[in-house]
Amino acid sequence: MTPSHSPDHAAITVSGLRKSYGDKHVLDGIDLHVPTGSIFSLLGPNGAGKTTTVQILSTLIAPDAGRVRIAGHDLAEEPRSVRAAIGVTGQFSAVDKLLTAEENLLLMADLAHLGRSEGRRRASELLEAFDLADVAKGIALTFSGGMLRRLDLAMTLVARPRVIFLDEPTTGLDPRSRRAMWQVIRDLVAGGVTIFLTTQYLEEADRLADRIAVLDHGKLVAEGTAHELKRLVPGGGISLRFADVHGVERAARTLREATRDAGDPEALTLRVPGDGGVRAVRSLLDRLDAEAVEVSGLTVHTPDLDDVFLALTGRPRAATDDSTARATTDATTADATTTQAITEETVR
Image (cartoon, rainbow, N blue to C red):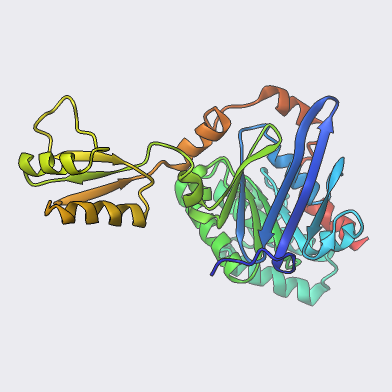
């Protein structure tokens, strides 16, 4: 079922969000709608404004203009209510590496005023849920990158936030740890939590996100499901394979738009441009069937998110806009203290 786009069902709504540093427009009037209980991914080159967006939505910096509602609360008028409803995991771990896993969680419980017994119960639940129970008494300095990221996210969850901002949460993790984090994220959403995800890994957005927005030079250049975004990019098509040359020739006469491998006149395949959707495939096969042309096999080719990213931003996903990166430096808050800063402000 597609989530409703009614404001009543939105975890996050953003309209006309702007932020500038000097004459540099870091965010230039963006609009967002994130349904409750979904994963929304914000993509963009380095310096495009992703982290600035997260910092504004998590109350760490103020926008120049625009309106934001999170978990039913107006960001400008009810910042403390917003902070009480959200959790943030930044690009770098907020874990105190001189403390044990359990001590880090208990520290967050104290900041959230959970009480001693409730805090210990919550810490125990999270250690178990994040597969950290066996290292509960271990000093975090000895943990692997994957363990630190799991602990970092567990700390974010101590106060049971309804909306979680994950700013490149799997940066630096090996493939196995990254996939383990993906499952943790899916489990959170299954429990009703809303995830706002920024990532440099396009496969991550493709696998996880219900909807994806692409940010470039402070503007949203596209938004939709992964499938919808891929259909924006030309280059897709359907490859048809036939049993013999006679079949290929008959199909080529029927499908005038099809092309053959010019370098191999004996090739048994044709390529037909298109979006590769079910309707297009069905129409293609119906046309061949009407001429009694038999297809022995077909393959659908669609652009991936790398192609989408390059087409929409005009540069590979690893490229860095140095001027924008410099402009956003003034807005950068140390990620190692992000979670604690929000929690401390909430309980004041």
